[in-house]
Image 1 (cartoon, rainbow, N blue to C red):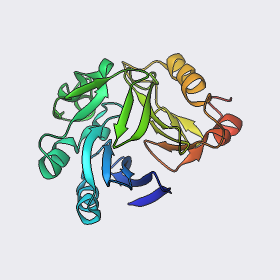
Image 2: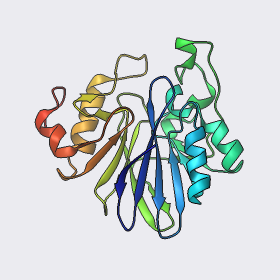
Image 3: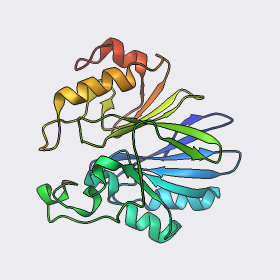
Image 4: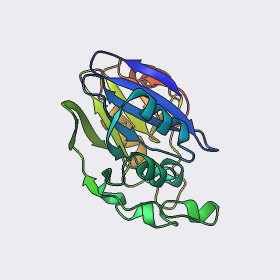
Length: 220
């Protein structure tokens, strides 16, 4: 666990989970202790323990996309923190969690099925965490239903596997599209202010300004 952002209205903690060290995030509204659990990957025990010890109140599981390393812990989180927790995903990947070939687990191993999503969002949807608003920006390319979660008041964006520090998401999967990914980065990320903190699906945080200037794949 690593605290990556803290303000009066938003706390963000990061957990690198599973063999691919996929970043799961706890987004917490400090005034209510309500939290979103974003992309719970394989082996989320430390994340679950943190929620319990801190007294956070889970409101939903939010998925930036449905590749197996981002959804492997969904069932355990629900089992231990609330069997009725909503599971949000972009409408383009509604069927991916329950399809091993679509979530890629069937391409790299025996395959598994995560719980079905309970709720769907699309571009422009606003997720409400006890009054703390996150804008959903559709950012396809790495996967068809990839999204960014933008918290405008605190200048924080959860990037999924679209944009990394000095890199971009893979776009060599059967359902990927490199040109769509580069367009998503330019239109959905680089239109944010330079001081926005970028919290990616793997690796360390960065900023929009840093990536616009130095990212060798997509310059601003």
